[in-house]
Image (cartoon, rainbow, N blue to C red; front, side, top):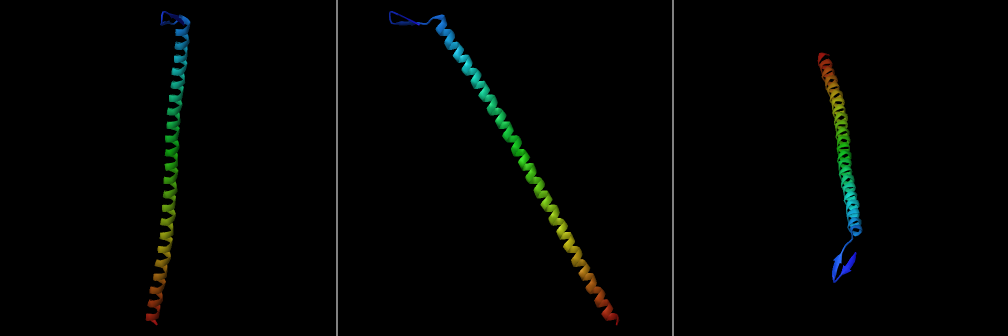
Length: 93
């Protein structure tokens, strides 16, 4: 860079240095934006997996509850049947 009567005159080398730095910064920005996008997609994928795991756990809990309720209902129905049979037997005697 030369100063000639108060004017700044940049050499081709100075311009080339600035252009090189701009290219490097542009490249760095693109890499960071790509990384940010990759991280965003990774976060979204992990969130979906977590939600699917929660969904599966809830479905399993519902199945266990349903099976327990069916088992309790079966026992209850058997007890009622036993009471009815006893009542029939007693009334028969």
